[in-house]
Image (cartoon, rainbow, N blue to C red; front, side):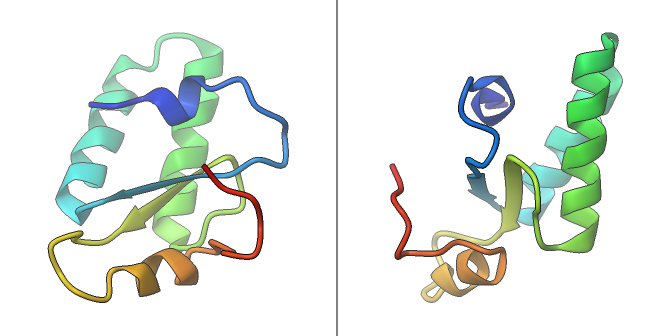
Length: 89
């Protein structure tokens, strides 16, 4: 499972949109919860779960449940708060 979004050292207002299938994001959240031994990791995991459960992210890692094989998946990305007018990589 990729955890780069949690490990990146970026400015506080930077968002990382993590687009994947719902099952993958749920399994990843469960695995991160199990591995949360340090306070820093536990805080990141709690924020990840809270954003996932609300459906719209307000923090650094924004989980986006979408199937990239299905046309129109970009709508889920926009609903999660992605702004194409802002710089992105």
